[in-house]
Length: 220
Image 1 (cartoon, rainbow, N blue to C red):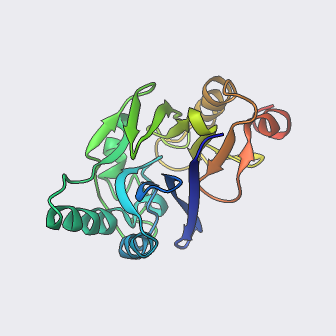
Image 2 (cartoon, helix red, strand yellow):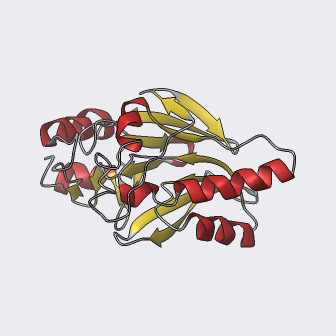
């Protein structure tokens, strides 16, 4: 049984799930989608004995990135003070333009314009190791052109962002969205994973791949 654990903070006006993933007993953690209040995320993790080893973005919509720069700045200020290398932010390469455009990432319309960037732009199928945990990038365009999921095979965990929800899928009426593309991504990229894979979405509760294959009305 894997000792990889996952925690969650629900943040911001859209009640977005910000996850932190870690090995039991380790002080290093990976943060996924710092939705808002980056300094709060940083302070909460530090108070609980965690040090951020990397930040993953599933996509670049405002409600998943409003806390990014605050968290990155706080983490890297601490890293510099402690003589460590800066922590990197990872996102799918097709999300570059959306991240840096307040119009495309909908932050302008949401009333708090935000433009940001990733340090590493990843590609479908690439594998990375952070905080002693290996994960695979699964590009899942549809909700946005550069949407991505992160699969931690050892633990049977999929971080799905706004691609796949419990018996639902992400909306596709924002810039770069496409329902046809989204459904293909889910069927061809996610439904081929083991049926007991636990899915942690960008909003709401977790689910499992097997359940979604049978009961998700958008994809059956």
